[in-house]
Every structure is written in C-alpha cells, then in structure tokens.
Length: 172
Ligand code: FES
Ligand code: FES
Image (tube, rainbow, N blue to C red; front, side, top):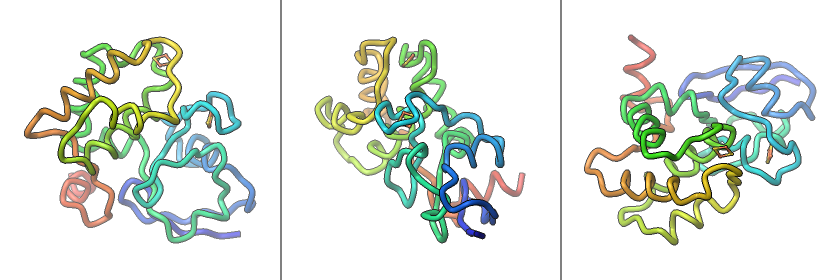
C-alpha cells in the first residue's frame, strides 16, 4: 500500500506492507536513526516520536496508520535552532548518559514544554511516564527540563510544515 504523510515538515510518500513498523520505516527507509529500538514491545519509550503532536511508540505504529499524519522525530527537533540548543543544554545538564532513551525523552519533553506555560516537576514526571531511562535515575533529566521551562527562549516544537523555522531549514 502507498501512504503519504509529513515527516519533519516535509511531505513524503512511501510504499510498503501495511503492518510495517514506523520504527523500521524511519531507520531503514528514511535513514533517520535517531529513533531507537529498546524493547520493541511498547514498554520502554525509546522509540517515541510525535504524530499529530502526540507522543506515539513507533515500534507499535504500523504503516497503515500513517496516511495524512504529521510525524516529527528527534532529527526534526535537532534541525531547528531552539531544538538543537535544547539538546545541547539537556546533555550539558547530565540528562544523557548512554543516550538510548534520549531521543524519546527529549521529544516527550519538548511536547510538554511547548504546551505548558508553567512547568513543574510533577508535570515533567507525568510527561515522561512512558519513557524509561536505565542510567540517570531521572533527576538530571527532570532538572534539565525544569531549567528549560524557566527560559524565555525555551524550546518550542515546530510541528507544522508551514512553521517558519522548518521553512527556513528547508531553504538553507
Ligand atoms: S522500542 Fe518501542 S517502546 Fe520500547
Ligand atoms: S541515558 Fe542510558 S537509558 Fe537513559
């Protein structure tokens, strides 16, 4: 089957089996290897991407569900100025160790930060409830997101194809 969707602000079309996993499509077809496979069973959140602004597990999302959707991966976040600055600050604050959980966590965090005017620790923990980190004990992660929430120029997701930041990236 053929599906058309938006990936990090760009319209794309793909032909494949309806049950092909979004995770494999991203990593093999689009070479977007930032999205990681952990458990492959919907338990760890390492494969989290955003679909129409909501966090979804790409290991459980089949190609048949992608038509007409807007998908956003960690590469899309990194391609924007605020997104790349957020990733740098997140790593500098100790939010990343082995990095396996990081792409999923920063996307969940960026979605939360984009939607939440006043950030608090409970909200951060709720936003990360589906993302498991086996290295950091979460404290550095929560602190990094809390610090980002206190910034005037905090990360804002660029989800729509017409978003000026994405348009700028496309044209550069
Ligand atoms: S790899 Fe998808 S939830 Fe673990
Ligand atoms: S940094 Fe290693 S699993 Fe989170």
